[in-house]
Image (cartoon, rainbow over all chains, first blue to last red; front, side, top):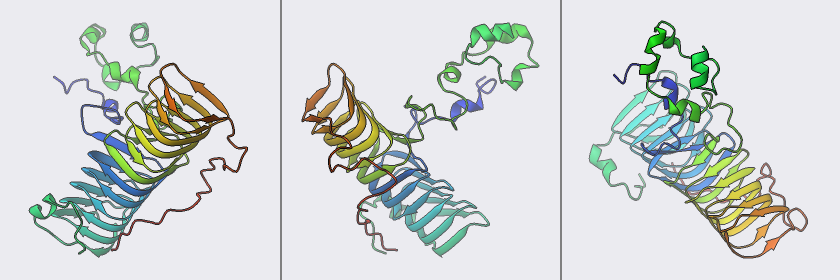
Length: 135
Length: 178
């Protein structure tokens, strides 16, 4: 019943949708230095120098992050220099990664550039990551 | 076609391929589509100051400790502990900024504990401003709380206009260590 006339367009702008998790977007012209903490999703098309803690982080092909990311899920489509701590990591074809990707499940699309290590960790490793291990 | 127009005045041509084969009589059974009128279909062209589809959104769950710079419009609903530099900066109802907000146009509906330096400043009825406001053009709505001085000196004194491109004093980057 709901599959009938549901328009795909309506899903496109969930930024202010209070129903789901809140999504923050940092556009192309945005540059942030410092610490970003969000109980929701962060979509990065700009530049971030610093640390990110979020539920989900998406780096678009325009995005650049220098620093550490702690999240439940990380999608890398842009440039990343630093470390990722996430149970689920997806490295897109457009990604350029330098650093370490601590993960439990990882997918790297063929064509992505990954320079660094991708250490596997058990799930409970990610559950209490209040302070980052200096590993 | 006329039926659709009366239904949906903002979209003269219903871009709905599935509607074509459906007989006209079924029209009434279609669910209402309030979202289609509320949000334009192309998010690529952000309607400049509506705030709904702005390019950058700092949602209310986000807290930034540090410096934020933007060469495009920005909507802040979260919490920022640090300076903000932007072009058009909108600070939403529940947002909190601790620091200076620079911009061409700053619209405040939330809280700032710090300073505003902008050509055009709008303090809405829910604004709570603790600190000075440097401006050229200001609008204050009834209900706004202001604890500070309003100085029409933007761009005159040594205060640099908020040229976003010339990013002054790059903050020491947070130690990352690979």
